[in-house]
Amino acid sequence: MADVAAKVGVSRALVSLVFRGQPGASPQTRERVFAAAAELGYRPDMAARLLARGRSKVLGVLFTARNPYHVDLVEAIYPAAEELGYDLVLSAAVPTRDEHKAIEALIGHRSEALLLCGPTIPDADVTAIARRIPTVVVGRHLPGAPLDVVTSYDRPGARSVIDYLVGLGHRDIVHVSGGSRPGAPERRRAYRDAMRSHGLADRIRVIAGNHTEEAGSEAARAMLAEGRPLPTAVFASNDQCAIGLLDVFTRAGVKVPEQVSIVGYDDSHIAGLSHIDLTTVRQDVPRLAHLAVRAADEQLRGAREAGAYLKLESKLLVRGTSGPVLA
Image (tube, rainbow, N blue to C red):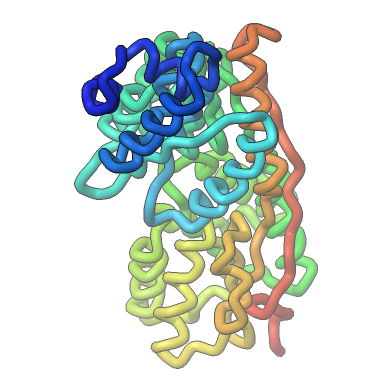
């Protein structure tokens, strides 16, 4: 604004009045100010204006760039935020940039509150962040922390997978775990509990993995290299892991689902692609996004204290990668 004022030969205060649409400048002066601004390439900084009023109306979103489910969440968060008058700043965690750096970038970009999609940093670190800035965690269980949690019921979702597979005649059902990734411990426990309840405790087998395609690929290669019959079904802790399994088994000539049924978790957009057609557990992403944004808004407005724990039902979606055991 100082450059525009100098070019027009008026005060910076007068230029500010013009851009704010306030009285105090003649029509001719207004035209000269806008013409000078256009010539200099100046555009008013809306974020700075909001800050001057005490609000930025910006929500910072942390997500993992390589996680399709997180991408789906971000897409759903945009309309939910717009509905309540918020803009978004995104910061991705990638192999060369950890979550701490990504979160600090969000705070440095004037975020009023944070939406953390499946953060993997320690509970104590998330709690420390929540004491600095209003925080909502999506897809991870953090009971008792000074923040809001929005997630799905993982245990019933995972239980429904085992009930479904057992109903199709499967007994040799392997679970490829997601390790300590958000949701993975609950899904792993649900798998074990469901297998026991069906009288299959002696068939329980958990292969250590991760929520990545690479982990699924490694698990599939390990099963193929064992020299014993493959399980008739594999329940992966998330869709990415399931797709890694599907790729390696298919390349090895294993027929899916005739020889091995594969089930994932999340129902990310890639699961429904025609050439993948993955049976999976659907989480209600639009609803999760809406609840997360609303929770952040309620904290910012002082409508309530942080600490809400919002959970949604999940649903098994049967597609082409699962079927009955063939005699």
